Image (cartoon, rainbow, N blue to C red; front, side, top):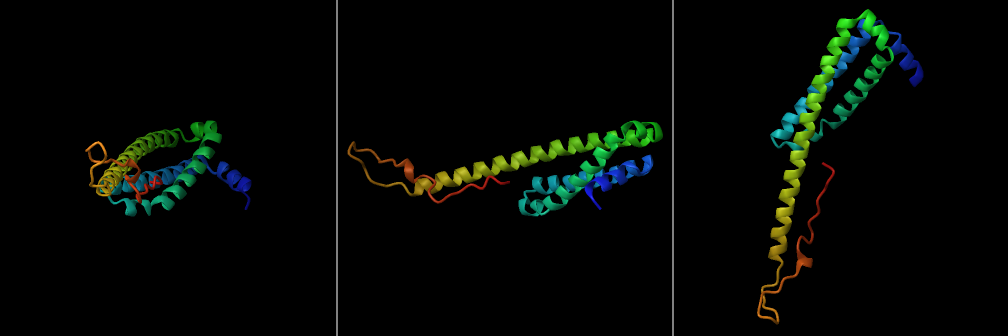
Length: 155
């Protein structure tokens, strides 16, 4: 089955059925994002990262249904207005959950970067020469600071 035929099949579904399928995909996406956010808040980064494939798949499913709902908007509004309103409310919940998820991800990234920067500074301090220079002051060599420390910005 081609992509075009799958889209045509979705577009030809009865209004209530299409909206129900979109609601199910939406609820599953919100649930996975909520689980991921909870894990990130608790500091379980690795466990949260295992949810990425499911979150990606669910997001793709939801986008597919949402586009079909958009294409069939006028038909759905006349045939299933209550279902369309439920979808709008569900989409608002998704937007709220996404904003919270992004906020927690940004906080986790900032904390991680700050922690790694602090570690790099401490490691750099340990590598400092402990001798006096020509002017009778401790020599500083900033080139040795953070040698061997790398920050993975993929999170």
